[in-house]
Length: 412
Length: 150
Image (cartoon, each protein chain N blue to C red):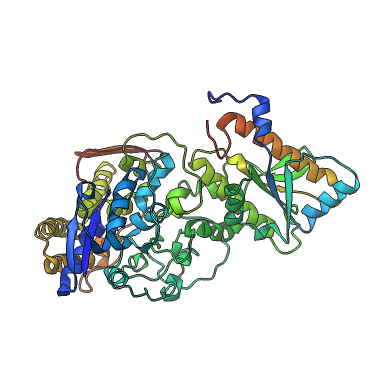
């Protein structure tokens, strides 16, 4: 079977992952990293990766006309992905389903290669359980008294939502690289339902039912009414779009954002996000360079605010950077076996390819059973207003921890 | 104030459909009382009766807005007087979150609102309707409608 993998814009993580299709030599796989100059020839299956803009329509039509089947692989192509957060500032990142008809989707950031293989072979992807069904934490669904932003590692038995963290597990399916295994609430990259973000928001609105909200006396008819001023609910959620619509903004049914754009698409993705979210977002969109980009963000902040980092943490971070270099070599040589080996090593330290385990001040969960977790355990840090700069990365945050400006000169 | 030209007629022309979800108890009750007392309200108001405003969530609100509503509001019982348990408070929280999302996307937060009314007083419902139109007029003058920004 002839398979062609096309990489459009954005991080190349899914494109690189599709190297694993070569394993077992079941299909004849070819990689096209520049689909804009692709001449066009008949293929059985076209796999599209990367985020799409309206301007890519012409090239997508060309691919569609030449192939029997088109598959959107990964969240960026299937639902807009993390890059679609730039739509908040007026960009037009569009999922494949909105551009061409009759396409299949493999969700997930990173998309799972087993599901892609099933989709290529024309088999149905088995119906998966919801994430809450496989989660070991216990939920009570009691109303919350407060919403928390940074994870406390002490409690590993109670549901994240009960503890006041925003976990999208209610609307997600089970997956291979569970963030919840690494003390990170589910980020909702594999939704079990359409418009998952907006449904999760409704659910969270109910959960927050105990938190007092501002009401105002209305002279006109004398009723209570919801006031427009900030209260505990809105103050503790400074970034709603980034939390609930992290991967699904264009398909969520919300109108397109009207915030003026402040730079490139990549910078627009970061602006408005929270400081504790930044390592995770950098891990998502950094592609093959995600490790160095994430660590650069973290180390800049740690250095400026004198957050202590243990020797053991530094050792593991060095190891990750080394693995990233080896990963580049494997990708350049299109060596699938080597790629698998290295990514498995990265997963052993960072949790998954989105680096869920990496955080400010250390790691979120134990890496080796033989070492003492206290040596490299992360802890809650203070949000300090200011501008942080380290070589190619420069960003400034306000007193709430929201990113106001960002400059990434290299590393992507 | 932004620079877009929004004369009064232009704004009035753009307020045609305001969807109001009214709860079956106090909300619809006060609208009925207003009807008995022959109180007038704007023709743009379209009432949808629901059992409780706790039934209404972001999905229903976005469906209404995407299908041509200019604004959506929920009218429930007074705080602490929900005829079920706390449906009006839950609805308030959801709408508070919706407002925040609209603000983050650069829209006015007046396209969704939550009100309360009392079944025995028809003027509470009519007062709410007037307030919705007043706020929507200001919002459209400043930032444009949800469909066409300026």
